[in-house]
Length: 77
Image (cartoon, rainbow, N blue to C red; front, side, top):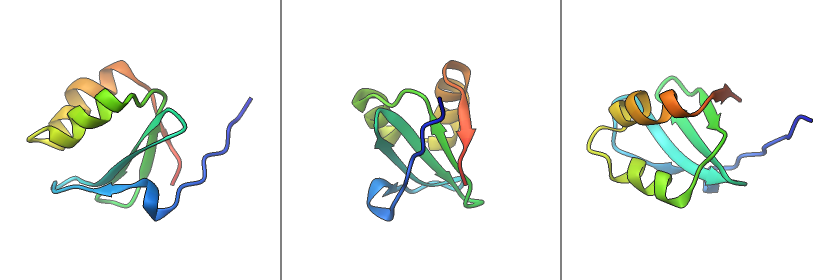
């Protein structure tokens, strides 16, 4: 079954990064808005994982080394 995720600007927290504009959590999923305006949703977005990403000195490195190998991302915009 396909689940529709509606995202509004309050769901995303801006971050300082050259490749990531904002991140967020919604309905147990992690949201990542990239600098090219694409938004990906990752299947599991625990508060701990979100906090780790938020605190990471390099958001892009965290996504490439931690998030992408462990979770499938789905392009939603």
